[in-house]
Length: 450
Image 1 (tube, rainbow, N blue to C red):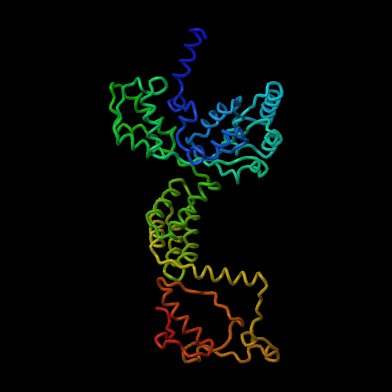
Image 2: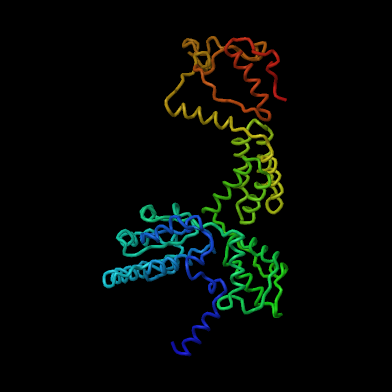
């Protein structure tokens, strides 16, 4: 390489952002994802056996998907080819596959094809990949932030191993930042920067597991500060971090996963977690009607009669949201979420209707007892419909001893929590009276709900 070429290469390196310059050069330098890349884990074993095959990398931005693809090409001594599913079509894809086939036939050299945002490939483009993936002409590494089971063809999924990337831990991010500050060749080691521990901790936490974002903030803070040596404080860190745009697709994983976390947190009675997930969805622009509708469903599904006030409160919250709108209705939603999370829980009604509908679907159909049939039409008396029916209000206890179902089956089983404790005691008395038996306990007298 001439001096001129070296100068050009140095200029290009200097123009790269810090995150690009600090990309790991080997698998040993790679930070994070030890659940599949650590010693003895699946990806390491595939590499050791030289049986990588095609893989799908699924996970949030900044967790190392592109970097690891480069390292896999190096580790398998393959030619690295990259396509962006957003900018490339079938023509470019066919050209790369043809060249890979020729390369393998002529020199036995493998090709690793990295397809970024592979979920953007349409069905035709994904189908083009299948034969060469199946025959091993290329090692496909597809990267996606979307759930591949929703976004990719089942045929492509079945031919690939899926590795889910997790956000980097704060310790991982701190390790990356310290490495960048110490590296004089690729990083900021020549800038004479001393970073405070609370600044390092702040950058590691606010980056949400995204190493690229953390390195970007560090670089902005250092390069925008003229003094040297530089003390990198927490205040400087806060000024250097750009507000994160929350990745959220109302039809994608983030929507369903966040909704699932909200519902499960309320069901689990963790009010703090429930408020956080509510805030996360509101910040991302979630539709208020969706949130309100989910709370109404949950009030019946997970709280039920353990707290009979839960449903009217959730319905009132839904109506208030329609009337008030954002931003004020966030207060209404927060109130409803907090109440539902703290309420006693019961799914007894949910289980009851599920079991009853299952019996109906499975053919265990019960004829309506003759004494319960409609008798308000001409001819009903001749058929005997309604004959023998006992009017419950005429019974001393308000419960007449007669058959209402025709089979011995108890669907509703109240839990021993909240108001359902009282309902459970009432049911003991009611069911005894329905069978014509004396109440097991005179204190279980059937009383109206307060």
